[in-house]
Length: 136
Image (cartoon, rainbow, N blue to C red; front, side):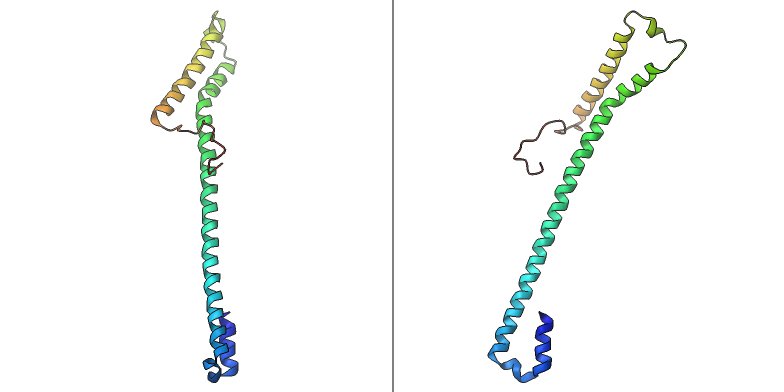
């Protein structure tokens, strides 16, 4: 648009710049350039907003996966230990050995969950958001 205005000045010279058509066209070109600038700013704002929403969703997913991984770490570790084939594991011969192992795994998982909940690190990650939530 700006180039068209400059070409008209260049081709027709200074005498055309005082004419009513040139002034009217110049105003239209300036208005169009202003609108294009405003639209570009709005589009950039919308793209930035989309980036923020995407980042928020990604962060929520990562937080959820981190909490789930943390909660299942004791189960995995203790399951791996009891799954090994040691020659001497006295609890395997106990009458309530498997009950003891299950209670130990459950207690350690619950203790870790309580610790995370007390520190506020779980928050509303495990709660379901309503359908009217902005980020859902």
